[in-house]
Length: 196
Image (tube, helix red, strand yellow):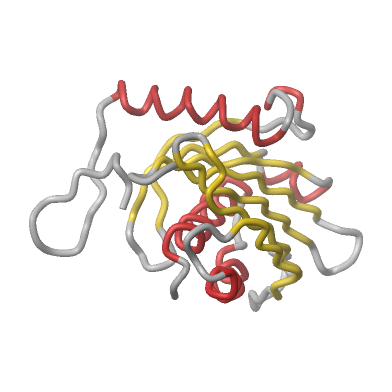
């Protein structure tokens, strides 16, 4: 689990407040990671994106701390957008970018490029596409698209692929800052553990 979550003895892990200094350090490290991940300064994104710091859940329900970069909901429904995520874990950092395209038809597309960096080196890397993330339908369902495992590290590539195929389509609904945080959780589960 995250090196920033101090687990108490016994019971299901919970998330607790962290010191302001740790939040500021997380925000600063995330801002640096966003620039590298996106290949440009986050301030140049259109539509504009804001940075958020907080907690999210892994697909198994365990909490972790992260920082994300995402636009507001209204502009993301009208035009393609970009965001990014950064989550520090005990073994390394989960970093990645998320691109959304509301599309001209009833189906929208989400693309994720995620990496596990261990001591600054790329240990595990994957990217995936999810189709069908429209918010306007009464029933929510999405379909996994292409999944590419470019570096599988200590895992079997097929285990990572299965994990992404299971969790990524389940966690693509809501406003961009939620989607980016949820996809960070998918990346953490699939690139760190790779077993679902």
